[in-house]
Amino acid sequence: MAKKVQVPTTKSAIMAALADAAGITKKQAVTAYDKLLEIAYAGAKTPKGIVLPGLGKLIKAKSKARMGRNPATGETMKIPARTKVKFRVAKAAKDAVLA
Image 1 (cartoon, one colour):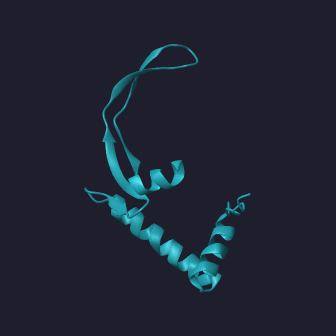
Image 2 (cartoon, rainbow, N blue to C red; image 1 turned 135 degrees about the vertical axis):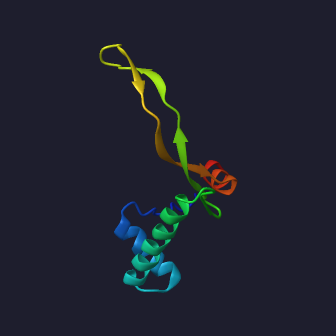
Image 3 (cartoon, rainbow, N blue to C red; image 1 turned 30 degrees about the vertical axis):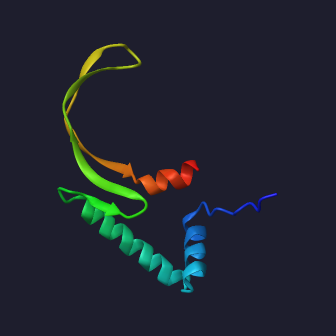
């Protein structure tokens, strides 16, 4: 019977697991995590986005204006163009999750 791995589900549990694995304090783990997010957010704003190796690519993308339908009334309406954030999952992440 395989041993079940405990997966942290809250930020504090993730930080505790990260600190334990890296041999650092929880405060240092939070600082490193916050800095990683800061770098990812800044990188996503660039035209090419940012690649997080083994995880995926975070990019800013524009969507065109289009026609849509209000689900409550069925009325046709125009949906304006907007900018959104996309995340493209890396092959390594897909293989690890789907294996």
